[in-house]
Amino acid sequence: MSSFLAATLLPGGSEAVLWGFLQLHPEQKSTALALATLGNTLGGMTSWACGRFLPRWQQLDRLPQMHHLQRWGSPALFFSWLPLVGDALCVAAGWLRLHWLPCCLFMALGKFARYWLVAQAA
Image 1 (cartoon, rainbow, N blue to C red):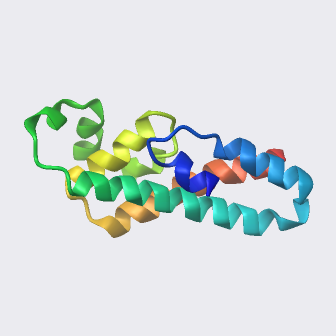
Image 2: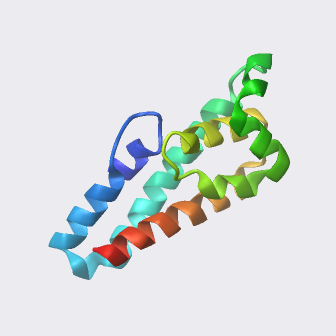
Image 3: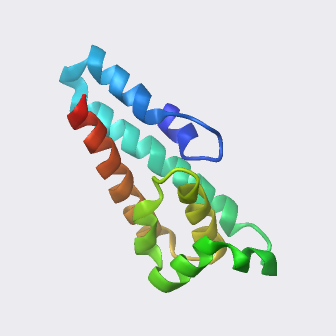
């Protein structure tokens, strides 16, 4: 739940929750890593869906994330885990009508990499 909420515009520290959980249950590293990645990816896809159903306003074209998405496409969503920028990338990808499957895969890869690093530190 923490990883899902952290991937939306709501504030949250899912990395700290994962780290704390792994301190208490290190034997569940694989399961915790999979669930954190899944939850955070679903949260990112929720943001993508919100962007997908936003009206096509010209003002959104001015967002800095639009330039990166228009240039790099779905692979830019590897960085959707970044604070502040990541949420905007997900919404912008939906608004640009980028196909959901590559967006989801690149989101999941980036989010997995971040959680994997947290799990290794724990």
